Structure formats: C-alpha cells, structure tokens
Amino acid sequence: MKFFEKILADLSIGVGSVRRSGESPAPSRSIHPLEGTMTTTANTTRATTSTIGTLIRAGVIATVAASAATMAVAAAGQAAGVSLDVAGAPIPVTGFGVLTAVFSLVGVLIAALLSRFARRPRRAFVRTTVVLTVLSLVPDVIVEAGAATKALLMLTHLVAAAIVIPAVARRLAA
Image (cartoon, rainbow, N blue to C red; front, side, top):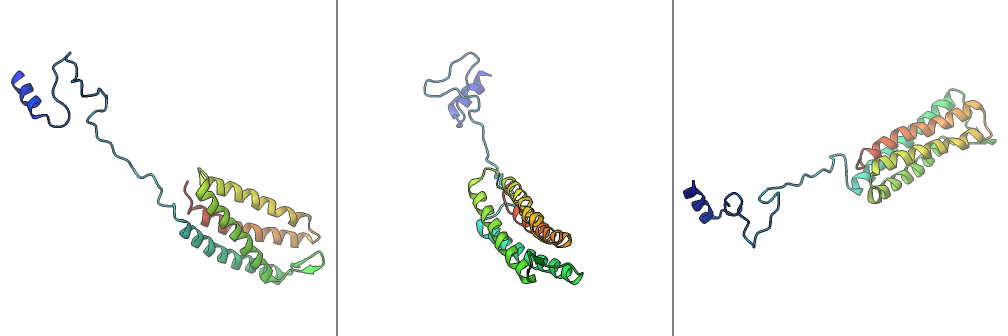
C-alpha cells in the first residue's frame, strides 16, 4: 500500500499529492471541500427570449394584425347595424386601425423598456398591459353613445389586446 502512495505522491497528477490519514496538507495548499471538482455553467436563457429587434418585429406584425382585426370588427358591427357615432360624431372604420396601431406600438415600446430594465419582463409586461387594457375600457363605458356602440368599442379593445399582448409577451424573458 505504501508503495502505491509513494508512486502517486511522486506523480502529482494535479489534484494534490496523496496524504496519509491524519497528515496535514502541505503549507502551500489550501483546504477546500470542492478542490479538484469540475463545475459547469448552464445557459438558462429560454428559447423564447429574443433581442430587441425580434421583439419589435413581432410587435409590429402583431400591431398590423390587431389593426386589421379591429377594423374588421368595426366594419362587421357597422354592417350589422351598430352605430359608430360617439358624442354625435362618426368614427371612421380606419380610425379603429389607426388608434389600434398607435397604442399597440406604445405597448411594444413598454415591452422593449421592460426587457431592458425589469427583472421579470414577461410578467411585468402582461400585468401592465392587462391593467392598461382594463383602463382603456373606462372611456368606452362613460362615452355618450348607445349600448351597442359601447359594447363594440370595448370589443375592439379586447380583440387588439388578445392579439398583441401574447405575441409580444412570448418574446420576453420569463
């Protein structure tokens, strides 16, 4: 047994020499419980995270889809006989698309900022946009319009949110 200990001690293969039980380590060596242990670092970034460019691209695509969808909902409502008059002034069908685009792009900007500064950007984005969506319904409730018009206005908000929020959120880190 001592023969093998001497050979291993002489070889000194990089993990330290072999000591007999009770023997102190050499003064130049430190005692560390994980000495000679290999460690690896795993990349924990999810596949759904993306760069700002892909986030913006997904947001713009969702914005275009949401704008088209809200215009389609408004046109269908108008074709079904729902008035698009609010406070005596008609809202053009294209107005639904334009306002959807503007506020959806604001949402994409919020997502870009949260991806940079929030600890959990997806959670922060979803919570923020759900609250903003609920708040966006308040003017529809108090506006001077018929009940069907109010319902149609609220439906367009929910349609836009249902398209943009998930499309952008899935591009953010959890």
